[in-house]
Image (cartoon, rainbow, N blue to C red; front, side, top):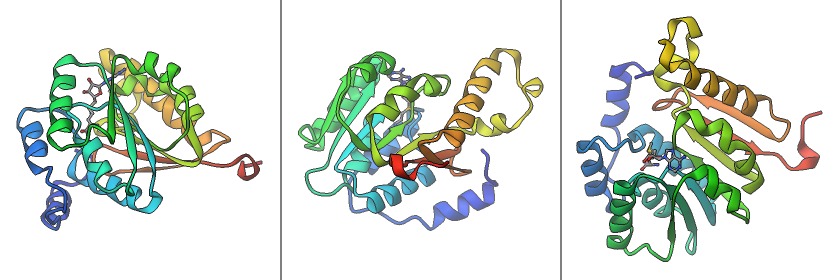
Length: 220
Ligand SMILES: C[S@@+](CC[C@H](N)C(=O)[O-])C[C@H]1O[C@@H](n2cnc3c(N)ncnc32)[C@H](O)[C@@H]1O
């Protein structure tokens, strides 16, 4: 946990019931240790969706479909989501959850490895939520940028890796050093990319929010 436990508990104590009915999906996932978004990150997503009003969202890492269903409940009428998942057990559960919520028209689940699936996708998305294997974010980036609309929002979750990212590589166990390096490379790239304006927030396990600037707005 990167934020003081007392502060996290206090913030959580202020959270109110939501208009959508996803609490059973959320609690079942948490009980079964499915790594869905943390409550604070979920609220940040809600804020971003309400601000941006994205008609088209792309998500990398569906798990059991919770964050897709959650974001969709705050999208404007007619808003759609494409989400990607490769774990068979989670795909099955995500399909079931999406169906039970009557959201099959709004949420499309693509099955397989995001590295391959992203390459085959076209179109342009107003918001892209990257929440998959942390060591792969850097490998998703070219396709994610190609698919992100001008002024689109890229949200990358779990970027601080329980605080490990801020530690020296020598303080990291040898077996975790590759992922540590890749996430540092990813953060450096999105912070310094000429098309992106990025802020990194210590929310949940760390969230980076990037806006894709139009060509005329690129930094000189
Ligand atoms: C943190 S969970 C996603 C949680 C979900 N966004 C939520 O908050 O409800 C990450 C998911 O990404 C999937 N994943 C990781 N790397 C992937 C890849 N390369 N392609 C497709 N799915 C991937 C994992 O199987 C896992 O279910």
